[in-house]
Length: 603
Image (cartoon, rainbow, N blue to C red; front, top):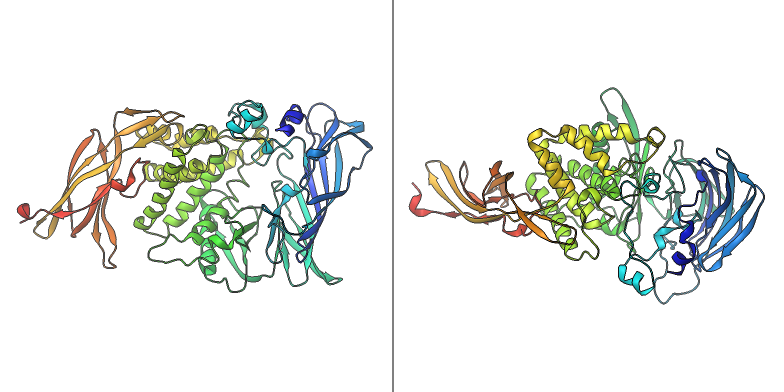
């Protein structure tokens, strides 16, 4: 609260943008410490001279700084020591188009045992941290209090989670912040214990041993986002290669998985997912921008995976040590691999403006991409388990929303919306208008918005919806509104399901009820008229003892009560409305019902 009250006035102050990053990082796993030296080359991308440069150091007590300096004369004009915030005045102003180098050297030290909240970033075996440890440029709004209650207690006005989509300041920065525009050139030299492998984005230029330490030099050959990771562990490595064949070209990609010895359980699944994902994404959207991908296991202090340029740190807890039943389980390792590789497109080729809806462009499209890879691998019955899980995530999340629920188009970094609802709605969208049409829209979207300089701003979800509308038939335009622009809910239910034997066929009689609602941001709902095409499905008990779909077809639902008479070629076991959970249903557990034999009417 004090940070915001003291420094908020500087939030949108014109500052130079980082263009080049050169790092030297010495890891000391046994001490859980590291030394880092950095050089940031920054350019004045504004139309007016810049006199003052604001530096945000890491204020945590683990960090100390040997120096912070520029390659031009500058004086420390003002320092806010509690916040690690420093204002330097340049002797000569930085004119538009001119550059300046900023240099720093910092030490991270682990001091004994902390009572709670200790850092697990730098550990004996499995270090993983990112560049948010290092100095930033200007005010950091990410540390502001977000809860309205907390803000009120500290004398602060309520705060929206994100800027509106038409805010010029938000359109000029992306979700990584405003330290850089259009990507950076990146190079790093890392050292670690001699029995470990250190990895960062870029391509390995050289590795060597010196004074009992092992060194690794990485360099990226194209601009990348200002977001990089540093990883070190005692790794085994699984390596493979693949060739992606596209319409008029092909691409060779080196594939590597760095894993802890003994954690081989799901390596084959992860490698298979990498191959399937790269083939799908490169053909459906655009070529992969790098020539290598490395998945890097890190310890289960955290359970997430994160996509950086040509590297994906991946927690052992959500992939490497899972026991996955091929018959019953969603293959989480396969799915997470596909999702994180999709971020090489959605997050690294396309980056949303830092406004409402930005995470729809990043997380929702990664969800969709992973679902399409899974859809090609698994039957619909298996996909239903994943969609039901994501639907439950959305329904649970909206029940605990503290501020306001917004349509997917305007999602404010709300995970239950951009992950849960996003997965269900994008799966439904491709199911209704065709996977090829959705991919054609996404391919054009990437082609038009991949280059920041061509547009002078970052894209928004509203820009994306324009591409979606172009490929959606007139009769289905309502879907774009229902899925993305509104909060649309259904209440579908199977009331009765019976069947009769008619010769060698089976006649299924279904009675279903349906309601459709629209909700506002605080949960008020109104019932709206039905005119929707909804799946009706029938299952039989398959040879493996599990329910298998033998009928799935869309029917127009116009009334709250509907009856269906369907003919199938096998004994039905279950039947119902929207059995795959493609729609946002307030109570999805009553969509399907066991089918009973109607003895009196059987012949």
